[in-house]
Image 1: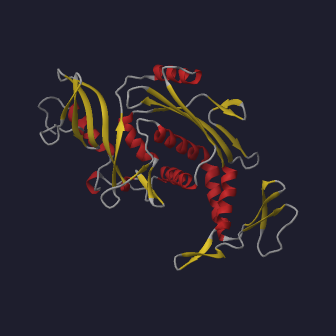
Image 2: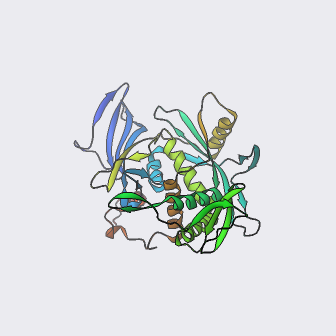
Image 3: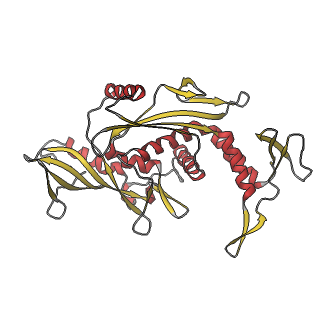
Length: 346
């Protein structure tokens, strides 16, 4: 809901044939363009608020990154349409999109090839298509998680030592050379004939196996979360990855650009077709992602898990008991007001 602007909330700046007006909305400050006659044109930009307690961003080492829910919040102004093309290229051949490879015995997911497009306007008002293909190989991430455990060392007095934190979790070798060590061992190939012998009784490896099973179950949704987040992150209407929170790290502000449009399914399909064929009037930013950093993958897994369980507690607080009401609360209130007959009381 956009509040009525008073002298403190409204700033008018002469700009060409029209004016730029700032209105205070529940999600932040909204800038719109108006004509000399006072007719509202298209939104120019919005100063959007992101909240840590609403899962809009998370901490990565000494920095803060935006989550997919955070980007979805920003996209309320950016209005980037995320669509799924019918085909994705896998090893040089067209396949149905997304293309999922499963283990023939367990039927669990082994790899996901997914392609998405983000269609929206740049700050200058030009149509920009961000076209991303993600190759999500769950086996390779499983191997990397084991190697990460093998590298970890103990810390003492705030400094790393040379002692391994998980010395008996895995060793490098060939399939013919089973380790003569205590434990129960299984071999996983990495660069044949070399591979990793893992001790599946070790607690560190048990953690890796549990995580691997989750990825196998929800690999397609994890891949979708990663690719959609990266599209919104890279589209020039948003174009931001790291943020600097205020108020003890609880809130951050991001400037987002957006243009009102009447694009329907037909127009979106036409833009997709032009982007795939190549068009001089549409800017296309294409990328094939075959590597995702560990922190981003872990965050995507957490978001999918929360979607599956309904959050940490599975309980939805009412707006009256929350410090900040959910994003659609004011929109619903505004809709109720607009639907009332003139003179009708609440």
